[in-house]
Image (cartoon, helix red, strand yellow):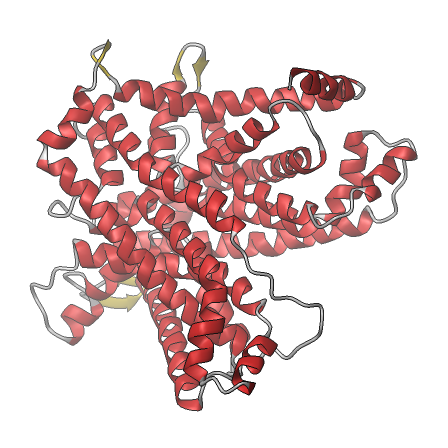
Length: 557
């Protein structure tokens, strides 16, 4: 093993720039991923500087903590089940059935992904709150309480069902209908074909989607903070309240570490077990994509479920638009631009802060993700597995844990970064680049390495080959990395809430503050502005990546 490592190092030493790059990436991951998590673990094991397990003993002693853990797990499992059901029905309907309006329904279904994570919570308050349009104005209910279990569950289902839909869409689209036709030809009923052929082939995708939503639900911070209420504690907001309300970092760190266990477990299962259990059904022969196993009544029933979810999406965003353009929701629905005027004048600095953080974060996150993906797939060096694990570790950890870790790690020697612009950028870069890494790895494994080797034989260095040959070829993954980095930098809340300051504030933190103070109209205006900025940014990023790819087609060294 040591001789193999020495051999790999000698090969890398022939390209000093590449060797330096690997070392810099290792150091960066150690400082900005591993070090903060280690600080959280250490803080959870100390009381007034002494090592102890007393903080974890509070889990057995305090009913509040046990209840918060049980509530988080219950909501996570149920939200995952409902989200996967909706996502499966939507993916099956829009990929396998001949129904009208597929493109528009696809766009509407994924719209919640590009909006702030707790837009659904604000919409639920507009519709079902004490002054809700449905509960108060239409039904005349004066004491309807949306806070607690039901509010959190349905806000998470609305938020995460599109993620399950995207995870299942590719799985269902790749199943050849000829398999179903063969089963029908030997006498199986339509239900038997679905249950014995189609459904088993999608089980890995279902399990993967369930675990992804479970991770997202456990890490969700905004929806529980807005809708859980005092009577329904959950782990992520409780860890935040221990730090900001009780000023008890040790207990907050302990709750954060408890939250890490189910999240990391689900992530490990999803990545290392489910990912290896895929069924190949693509034969290379062109086939029709329409399934024959669904009768007309069932087809329209499934289509009705998809339309119902799309209608909920439209309704939720419709009330956000209405709320941002009315004087006082629930009492005065007069058209007004006061909320936007407040955002664009009095609090314009928050908008510029958020844009600057997102604009700086996006290219760093995208390029770094592609470089790491390139190293993982194309190069052998000692510690490659550790690099891969460390680079994606922050994605598996809830944002609350990351935020607490950055406070503990960078609020003293040797790193004084708390309250600065740099800590926000660094947090977002290392928090959200794993998605870009995985996209890059998936695409690179489909590209013949001889293309890059040919460039190097013509005199290109490793980095020149990456920049002029590999990067244009993996443009779709690069685009995904850039878009994801920008969207998350614009909509992040769980980690960001610990890191904002008087000098650098973010729009998502302001949305949460406005909801907390009862100014839902201003919160809606902020939400609309975030969504508009994100949609414009996606178009701009697409244009930039397309232009970059076109201009680098003619390779010269």
